[in-house]
Structure formats: C-alpha cells, structure tokens
Amino acid sequence: MTQVRVPWFFALIVATSFAVGMALLPHPVPIVEVGDKWQHMAAFGTLTLLSVLAFPNGSLLRIGERLSFLGAMIEVLQSIPALHRDCDIMDWVADTTIIVAVLIVVRIGRGARRR
Image (cartoon, rainbow, N blue to C red; front, side, top):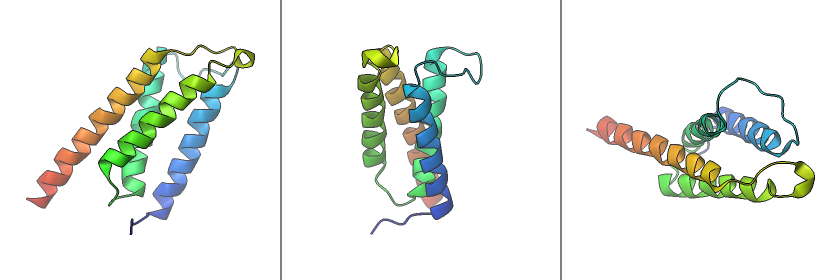
C-alpha cells in the first residue's frame, strides 16, 4: 500500500488545481514575466516535487508518467478554440523534461541516502 503524506498531498492538489486553472484561462494574469517554457518548467517541477513528497514510497516512473500525461492533456484542452490558447507540443516537451530531471535528482538522492 502506498503511503500518503496528507499535508503534501493537500499542497499537491492545490498546486495542480492552480496550474490547470491558469493553463485553461483564456487570458491568465501573468504572475511573473518570464518565458512560457520557464512557466511550464516551474509548474511541473513543483508538481513533481510535491508528488514525490506526497507519495514517498510511490513509483517514480508512475509519478513521471501521470504528470507527463497531465501536461499532454493540458495541451489538448488548450486547442479548444473558445479558450483562445495555443496547443504547443514543445510545452509538453518542456513539462516532461523537467519532470524527468526532478525525478532523476530524487532517484540519485534516494540512492545516496540508502548508502
């Protein structure tokens, strides 16, 4: 059975809701003035870290797969004309790249901690 750390799980739900909400708003209010890809990487880096903290015994592969799928689904939803957003596969690539990078760091950290 997978252990769940409730405070981190709650933070994950809040952060995921915020990220998806901002991604699907027709004209989101910019929080910081950085490039689009940096916003994607900040969001999915945070979601990845919160996922690992919320599910400390969870499969890193499964966490990565689910978050990458979320990024892909956001891009699909952004293709809805009424949202006035752009579907860009490179946004999904940025999401998945940072997810993998964070998970590699976590895996290395877990290995070092076990030694």
